[in-house]
Length: 251
Image (cartoon, rainbow, N blue to C red; front, side):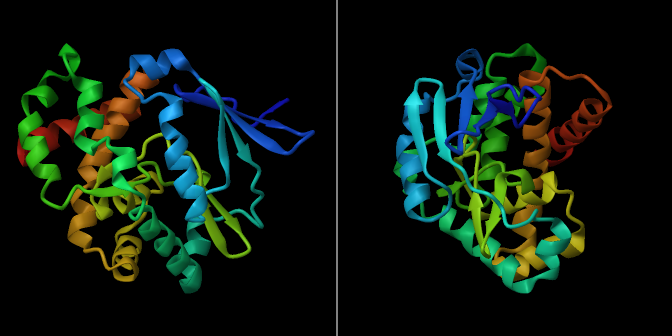
């Protein structure tokens, strides 16, 4: 057994068994319980749909804390430079993100607001956020919140195979706006303004909508790092300042 990801991500670790070319994702049940994640069995229908829609390799829940994933080897490493320099590839990527929105929302159920609320609820450390939860709800609902989103789009969760793009790691899928997924991708991959505009043009989602959700990405990253990872470093302190400005000046 070879560890593919050495760091503990709070919710899971990933292992590869070389004998049968399967990937096994091993979940930390304590983290699931502590941070209000759904039971792994609740994801079965999501995995079935993503496979049928050709969005991801086949997933199989084999126990209460382990899933088996068919191995999917990339033809080559996808990079931001390659993605934005290849118009055809960018269109394929954005077509796949649109397909995510077609997943049956009755399966996902969890809203982006509930995802945030589950982290901050009754936690005195996040008093300012709790006090502004109604304003936050209004802010999110500036755009329709009834599309299924992946919730954690970045290059490590994207596989390229024969000019087809597949997504992994559906742990954070929620109901939100179409612009939220692109905002999270822009945030996690540190896209510049020109690249965000290109995403907007090819996806036909307004730049205004994408930028609207960037402060939400800051907020989620801050909550993840402080709660799940327990960090308190320079990055966290910088994010905290961004979150405070968002709460005070925008909400």
